[in-house]
Image (cartoon, rainbow, N blue to C red; front, side, top):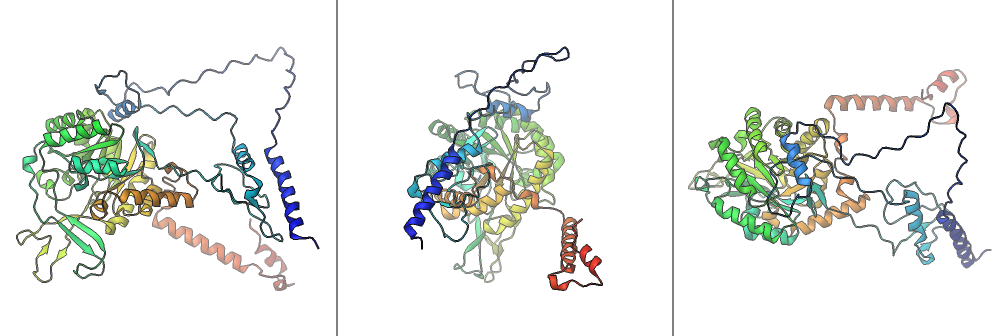
Length: 533
């Protein structure tokens, strides 16, 4: 009988041999003798040096000019901002010298000490468990387990670059109360949010008068009481009521204090080209990194032909987007309203009119409820109310559907490298964010979640998103962005697929289940029932 200690030594010696084989350097093949020249042979032509960037069309759209300007380094050290947006792909990173998936795996295994390699069950086969994932590497069938206590998996990278804007993570403060002044936006940057979108501004803040109370909440199973969990949030709040000059001063101060952080200005105006151009010019002068255009506020502002009044009218949207993108010199995102039958239609118009990205969704038009004691609607202002915008966890499934619709359209009709999608709606966990990213979102905005849980929510979101990525061996956001999109189809196609699957299951069932089922009379048919072609 072989003692366990002898088994261990034999296994370790065998392991050492396998490791030497894996890490053995591969010698280059000796150079072959050149073939003798013949009359018909041609000398090889030298390889032409690749161009530094792909040729550009002489007719460049406003969106292309903006994006190229955002990605190109400044021509001088002056503070003057470029006046055009250009399109150019970033130069590819140089390949690592002598790197390959197999050599990376070998190096990882070679770095393990024998104390990190332990045998599994002696009488069975063993899987190879590596901490981390070698992208593109071959599947290993080595019969032992590796516990890499020193060589840990690389921490997932949450950083994203969207329309030339680099963010440490994809989590963005959505336009609203969490971005209403310098103090709260500074807090957002200090907590670690990837970007901040300020509350929407317009030229004449004197026209904006907010009321109080302006919010109402829906609680699960509470029947109007204050004990249930908050799942819905309605607001009848308007855009910023602070003077534009004050907001612009604070934008500039934030960019001076946080030059490497992304600040996005949200703007809205009436149906007036000159007003839009003036507002864009003044906001850009503060140094903000991009603009989000509010085409989607569902209450109050549509009465002035603003917000959703534009986003629901594709012809009007195309005209206003044309004005904006002809004037803007920084990336433009168009914020979409969900209060429309097919949200992909206005999204298509916004992108075709020069916008670099779309955001979706804004709040859903709603009536929160009726107070069964007073018989008045909520939120109640002097005994009256008005329909408002619905948000929080309850809208998350609706937002997923709208984002999926936009993402499928963008994938089919637009170059995903040059256009972006920012998802909004009911995000309170890293899992909520992962769902949006799996549908193709580049960034994920949070507004109501911050109002309910505070600015520290970003730490929880980052931690939970990293846990999700580790579970699936994803190392970057791009590893899984849009991965679930291909599994959506039409209902007709679902029916076809299920009928086909049912027929296959029936065909398999008709086949013989055991050797005892063969009969002499039906031998030929029984054989044919199990043929696959």
